[in-house]
Image (cartoon, rainbow, N blue to C red; front, side, top):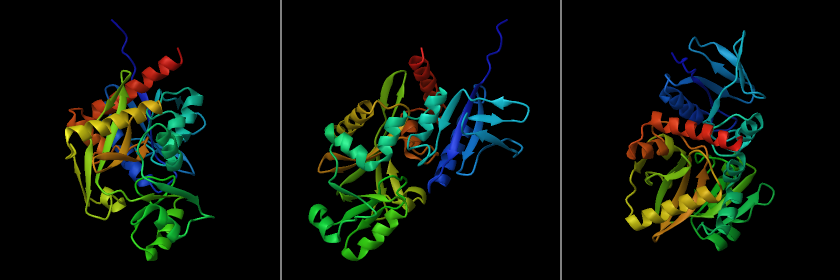
Length: 336
């Protein structure tokens, strides 16, 4: 009789150090609920600046050592087989978790540290992708010490324009500026999130978001979702308070759909990404313009990638299983 195969231990990281803490907790909770308990031993881990901890089914908190990713259960320590990274913002989306896992030689589900760090920095990501022929909106980068005057921005970008933190997600700190009177407050709002900001021309058109992931060595591009916000743009309340329609598939013709999916494939392969990511675009006069790339996208049930996976006939449980399988296979390939 063959011995029973032990379960794969999964450390699900959630929380983080930024304004996206609560959103990450939602993503991590859904992952923990959906993972197959017949196959996986799941350890939810909440990450804060003060401590990392795993809370068991009896609500007892156990310390998780960030230096080794081990869980202290008193009599024994658990060393995870795989890390499932659901931290939006730092330290999950900016490459720190990926770097830690690489050093410890632990497979992890998100992309490698370079692609994570690059995509988290909007200025640097736009610079690299523009050089590879990805269409992007005109923009101005600055830090807290040298913001341009309203007139400078208006002369270069026109009105309206967006002011956004350079390194942030979930639309935290983003403002649309329609007139000079709004500019100073927009700067203050963005600088509250990051001392670096990006000021970007407001594109006029259809907003779409497209998920991608790798499985069995193949890059799979999901069906675009169209975003129709009740607000001036797809801001924080539109994303998380139900003030937007999210229509999958997007109401764009086949030619534009193919064009935007080809751009996502080019971005994914150019940056040699792993795991799931989501790229956002505005389609202006039939041309998709890249806005930003999320290397640790939302995974709650109302998030865009789960919606797109469902449309393609993949359950969340199967989708998460694919990400874990690909992480393990990549690790074996890189350490064979």
